[in-house]
Amino acid sequence: MIELVVAGAAGVASHIKSKKFVRRRLRFTRWVERPGFGLLAGAATALVAAPLVAALPFVGAGAGMAVGIGAGLGVGTGVSVGAGQARRGYTGDEDY
Figure (spheres, rainbow, N blue to C red):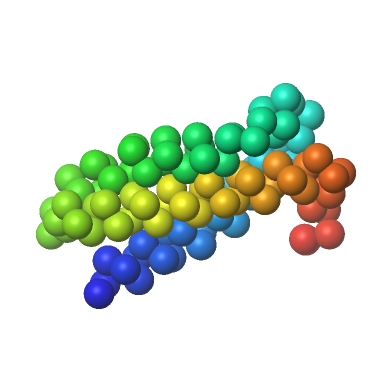
């Protein structure tokens, strides 16, 4: 149960951070125009995060996979939303 809460928190945090990063830093690049950019970023994050979390003491492979998938989904959706906002010209300056 705890790993699901941690996975959800990782997903929300990674969604917010990646959305802001893509919207502000990558808005002038061609990467935001690619439709599979969010999927690629999310899959890469899940592949990197799952083994790292699973290697932590007192954390099993299931928890590592859950956190990796949660972070991957968060990054994927954040990149997709941020890319859409960058294409529409939203800079995010109103967030502060």
